[in-house]
Length: 424
Image: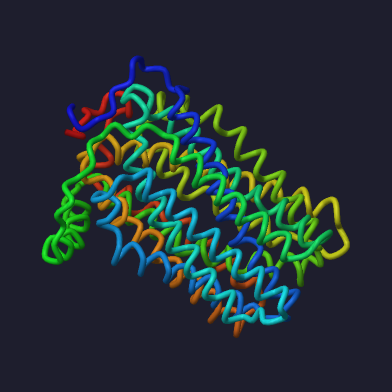
């Protein structure tokens, strides 16, 4: 194990993991703050339509595809801590530029589309490098727990960042939000630089031929993996329809449920807390249930969240906040448990030196499907009310576990703790 970081003990919360975790919390919070706020700014400041919001989400998905598709190999060819710091610094620069545009009266829908494109693409690269760095920071025996903590903060941030965004937009202005967001990226960039990355840096020689060969190597690994390929297909299927839900649920809450940004933000906080609490059960679930059953449940059950959103009623402020909060919380809990297991599976089955480009390849598919889901929502919103779009997307989520059922390799997997570690 010469290319792995060797710590003095198997203790999870060592200096490096602690720094990695809270810097990831800041980075992910910043990303979700941006992606939650941009549609609201478009709707309320620029008077955009639901289709315009879908275009923003489409651009965000395209950013992921372009950046990961073209630059993914660099996550295995450079020092990962430095690479992640650079991605965070660049995201801070983008948000600073958006704040300046707003202050000078030049903010436009196009500017928000470009910002979503850049932030999502840079975040995709950051996340691929993070996925490759984590197994070298956390001991193999602590991977499931480590992934639970990471998934927990991401689940909470995925929903809970809405509380901060809603409150800042309600009480202050988009400038305060975008500047706050940029600060989270800068602090994260500085923190990551403190992590001791003991894995030797890759050779400096990296020709264009090597680069273009690397572009396809991650996809070859993904397609040849009998476990991770069907899991990736299920994630892509799930993301297709959950992105459609994400593209319209804020519009639905604002214009059908007559909720304010602050009320949506409070509901997001409730959902984030529920998602964070689910961290306590994730290791227990994966220790006691085989992957096939857990994956099926966590891919299909989030459909209940979409049904909850359909029940929002004008004038029922407390009921709407609780209903939306519970819906988002249940969604976050399922996703958190799912990510804990799928990330651990990847870290157990994929060679350590290839995790970065493998993650990039898988995210091209699983995150690259997002613009398709957003575009689907945008097209449907031209002909249907937002409730109709939510209903169709909910049905799509229900069948996202079909790829798991169809895979013999996934059905035969034992408990995560019994899977042979093939990372070398």
